[in-house]
Length: 140
Image (cartoon, rainbow, N blue to C red; front, side, top):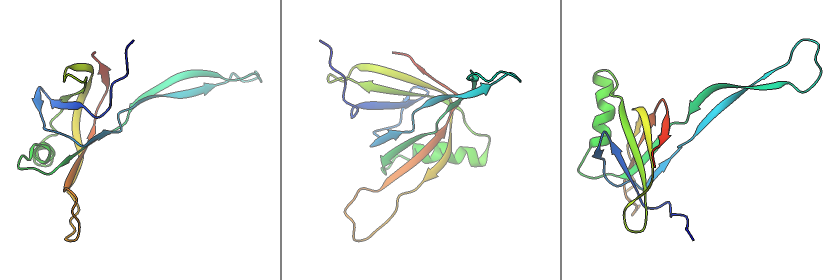
């Protein structure tokens, strides 16, 4: 009997380069718009046709560390053209092996958020990067 995998063990890579650990990856979805069409004098239920395919922006959150790879990826887009990359998100099994994997096509940072600061807090400083993309494929 196969058991489902926990969602807490995963890895994120950009063009084969691991970006470090993330506390959260969210917004990972795809939808197809529905177009309703009814011919002039027909009063029956309208036909439903597939419309535009849309992919939600993905948000990566991680604790701030000495590496600033997320910020540098975003900063490149401000200084030059946006740097489109292939992003791979891999769900790991209990042994650390790939259980499922998704490739995100033509991904590029669209928003960077630095951590909030509070002198009375004992929480970890977390930065986030929102990524737009043009499609995803489940590869495993």
